[in-house]
Length: 571
Image 1 (cartoon, rainbow, N blue to C red):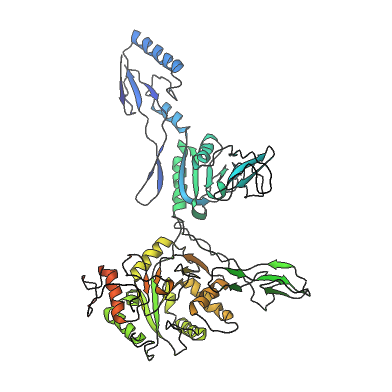
Image 2 (cartoon, rainbow, N blue to C red):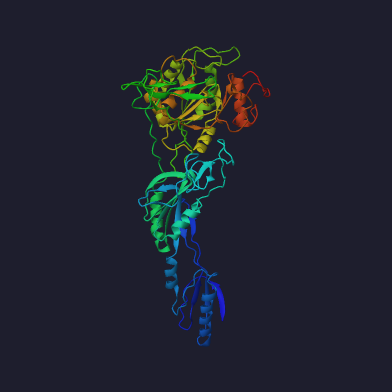
């Protein structure tokens, strides 16, 4: 009697008996070059025993019986000994095993879904005794008494109301993990599809049928098909149908229509106006109050006594868009860049260069906006200047955007970028930042660009084509009251009021107005502002591309002389 481990293969021989003892193995998931997932069922290693006829046969059958009886804990499944080849018998048993094929980052359609876990509880006010989990991040379920528990960030035996808590942490009956969700489906013969969601404390829904329609894409989702090994080809075919819908185009978020101060907000029940303190450290939205049966208005303070006073709604929600998931269709990174140049204006200060000189310098070297996919200069107009030399008249600023709208070139590019001429701007770096932001295709967003005050400084204004479409369609409604002030605050406030969303990348711009003076050597900022002398501008550009102020690399610019950087050096 001798045994050898070998691959499972048929060896027909009339004079020999082949017994196969199959060990159950997990199927292995593999990904092809196109990112498609498929299941590879590893063939189990089989113990093949060759036996001569006669007494030895009886000895072998006794051995098999002994192993079947005494080794159940060590060998999960034991195939029957047979006088035939045994291959079909073994495959029949394997075909009954359940496997799951997953597609991460997707939520598939469901028609017969059943939630496996209790919905997680909201913080503070909901009893989490039964759920044992919390919908809000950073919260845990703590027991107060045998009949009450709440989601809190921490627990004191005596709370702020002088009430006692046991502070025993309550956990969910089933662990809210993808594995536990998937295992539940694998163990249920009727389960064919499972959708797992990590958000709000985790959820798991199982279905008795399968669907190939994608209804949402985000990294918090994971959808899987489950079935027997015999159904693997069917499940793989359905996954191919799923893959054909990728990358997934997220539906556009609805833009609510809200009212301005002085308008009737009875129908909209929300307000556009916002009041901020002098340093923009706190902003307060207006609220809609009922005045009479026929009129409701937006107010910052409480309504007077002669109003009905019923609160109908608050300010518009300013949504921040998170980076899109791995399966989501993304906004392209093509750039339409422009600068506003007052070609006849003198230098604001004697030792500065004129806007025309700064523009000619960029054009001569083919850098800054000339490195974008599309670029233009637009004519500025003489306006009152602030100390920093930028527009202080919003009407003049709106005239520039009217030129952009009239030309229409922006429509051919995914992003529009307004860059001040005295900012050293690197389009290639902006594309790197956009890759990291992962903006969903078609999203109406502008980019917050700096830590300073309202987080949107006018030296570098970046927005999607779709956001600019909204501004061009309704931006005239933002022109209310006096039109004096910074054009950047006006633009941000107007886009917020029109329902344009935003993403945040506060490392886009380094600006001296935000006390961010320093050499241009950080290796990551997209623009450095301000450099109002051509020499200073070129020094900064050389620091970006060469690592120092002199031209020490082919991409650098020749400069007359070099001075080492020092704080408060005139720019």
